[in-house]
Every structure is written in structure tokens, then in C-alpha cells.
Image 1 (tube, helix red, strand yellow):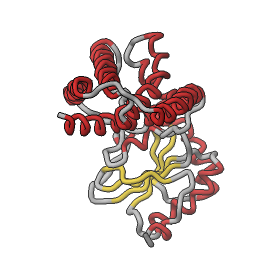
Image 2 (tube, helix red, strand yellow; image 1 turned 30 degrees about the horizontal axis):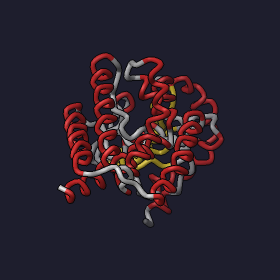
Image 3 (cartoon, rainbow, N blue to C red; image 1 turned 180 degrees about the vertical axis):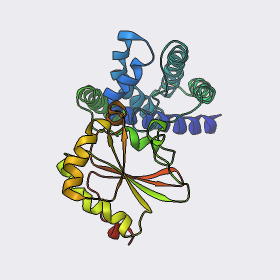
Image 4 (cartoon, helix red, strand yellow; image 1 turned 60 degrees about the horizontal axis):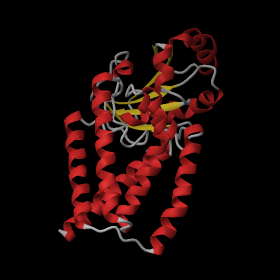
Length: 291
């Protein structure tokens, strides 16, 4: 049982460390996910979850008060599961938020229940097999790290350390349906979707390199995508200046701003799947064909 306990400590501890740090880099977004659970003011407790997960994960791995750490891990996971059940039935939960804004799991609910059940059982095994001894060197690691992660979590709630764009989560997957429905893409062709604003200076600077994506043979077609509110500016400003041969498409302003926070972006689509996201600095197609 000691060997099983050690394996469980390493696996569960590593999972908690990964989960905690993934949330820590953008606690503000994790708070927004917590709001979807429909738990009201309790969502503000989300600022405490990343440091708690990090400290529990570290305690399990280094063996600090291993028994009680295993028990607390099981109880914390049980509470998380109860919140997830509540959010699934009474909230608007689309993703469990297990890894914050860094990684969207898109796991079915049943698989989350099974994973959490394994963690709960594993935590109780750790609790039953291990004692609660500790050493000075462990405290010298846990104590300063506690101050650091709790402080970092508070900072990240106000000013996140990392903010991935929504579109990044679709790499390797089909484009969002609200975007793809405006396009008629062929699975046999490779596309560059130029996400731009006709009055954006950075978009102007990127235009020549976007054009080179097709000229170099890196892609088969270039499609320019922008908000329907800028339709007039595309013709009166952008095309008058650049006279490109892009195929222009327009989407609703709310859809555009929700999916694309920073401009310009170039979405490389192969086999109807998002293969890469380029930008805000867009490399030349001739450079890309050399790699």
C-alpha cells in the first residue's frame, strides 16, 4: 500500500499543481467561470482556490503532513464536485474551469465525475496509509510559497498574468459555428482567414505579408473577415488604399468582438480545422514556406 500511496501522491499532487498554476495565471477569468455556476457572491472565494490547490499538490509530493493532506484533498475535491453538479443543473456551466483559462477540457460531465471520484478515493487511501509527520525543510518551502501564491492570486484577480484569446482554444478543432457559417470552405483547400479592421494601422502593416501567404503557395486562398459595422470602411478606406484580391466576409459585431480581442490575426485553416493562429505580427508567406 505504501507504493500505491506514493504513486497516488505524485499523480494527484502533480494534477493539483497543474490545476492551481493554470488558474493562478488568470484568476480573473476563473472568477468569471465561477460566476457561471450560479453561486452568487460565493464566486469571490475563487481567488482562494488556486493557492490552495498549489499548496495541497506540493504537500502531497514532498510528504508534508501527508495523511491530513490526503484527507483535505479528498474533501476539497468532494466540494468541487458538489459545486459542479449544482452548476450543471442550475447554472450556465459550459466548462468545469478545472484548468482555468489556460486549458479548456471540453470533457463530458460523467468523465469529470469519474476523475473526481478517483481523486477522492485516492486521497482517502493516502490518509489511511500515511501519518502526519513533517520536517523543518518542508516548512521552509511551504511557508514562503504560501505567501507568494496567495499574493499572486490577489494580483491575478485584478491584473491577470496571462490572457489567452478565445480563438486559441479552437486550434486543432473546427472554427466556431458562428464564424464558419458565413464561409464556404472546401476541405481540400488551405485558407488564411485575415481577421482585421479596415482602419487598424497594424492591419495595414500586415496586409502585404497576408497577400504573400497566397502568392508564396503557403495557402490556397485568403479570406478577409471583419465586423459588418465596418463594411463601408472596407471599400472606402481599405480597398482604396490596398486594392487586394481578398474575398471579404462580414460577421455580426458582437460575434466578431467576442471571438477576436486583438487585431490583426490570421487563422490558418486546413481540412476545415484551425491549424494555427498568426499575429499580431504576421510573417511573410515566403518565410513560412521555408520551415
